Length: 363
Image (cartoon, rainbow, N blue to C red):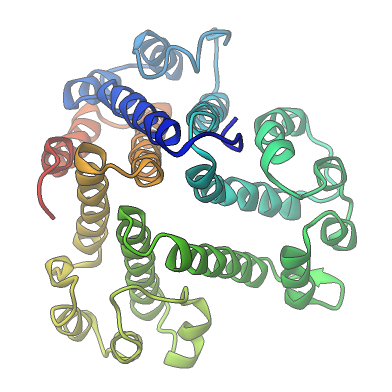
């Protein structure tokens, strides 16, 4: 796997091979026409049959029984394939790039920890499926005690199963032996992004991964501030604990201005004076769409032109996450028997936003 010792030239060749493989996988992505065909399905089972027939997902559904398949099962298969793709790619990296890329899987670990926290002490039929989903990468890349965490009955046992950094975060966020879920989740993600930011700054300052990762942090902060300020009327002091640090191209003074903005017009006026001025919009919905497009365009550019294997893998993860989220939304719409025109309208709108992304257009 990626941790093996290899001569420098051989390591470069290995990374080039990985980049070629990622681009080939990206080439199998769902097209606008594919999304429209998916939205035309009449049942969840039909959706699964369509996905199984598509080159991008035939492996994910290869051994699945599609008769009467439920949406939750499809989501599980999509997420499992997402993680297995990551695992297959990281095996081909040189030691240096493998060290960085393995850190991206931290999002997978945090998902599992938060799932275990929500379901501590429960014993429901789906638990075994979740265990199969998370187990391979947790055992391979994490210091978390998988067996202890999957069987945890309370916060104390969850904390005992974690690595020191996460254990401290959970214990600090606990209140009287009970977890404030929102606080724990927020602090865990902040700890993860801080550690990864510090690593990238130290080891990959001129790598494309810094630009893509840093932009992701800034977009995350912009959207989080907008939602907390615009939808919940949080004050500056209430918003600041939710900000991911360090930011990339957003100055602290600008973050403070965004947090204290008096409405959507003022928020967008401040945003226009930042490197993300193209996100300034008339509504929150438009801001969401433009922000997602911004990251997809960044990822598309990296996928087409970057020579950094970690950056290309990270960009592919952004693409795959977007694609699977869109699939899940369409399937959920079909599950609730929404009007076909409504679904097609959604797909068509998103398809337009995809054009620059797929062409690797400039941001």
